[in-house]
Image (cartoon, rainbow, N blue to C red):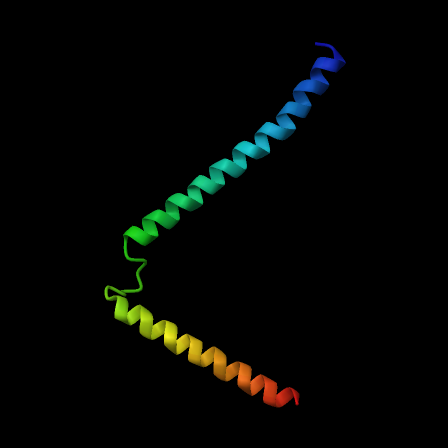
Length: 74
């Protein structure tokens, strides 16, 4: 095999191998996310109202934190 062919094969492999690895990891992450979402994610939030309550509570906590931070900076 000539140096030109070896260099060509090396360059192709430098592109193809990382692309295949990235695609595999991406598919694995998507599969894990799908399985987690289908299984209820273990958070026991069967009712949408629970999720809304948690969202509102978190928003209130963040708003309070931002207000406290602004008062400390001034």
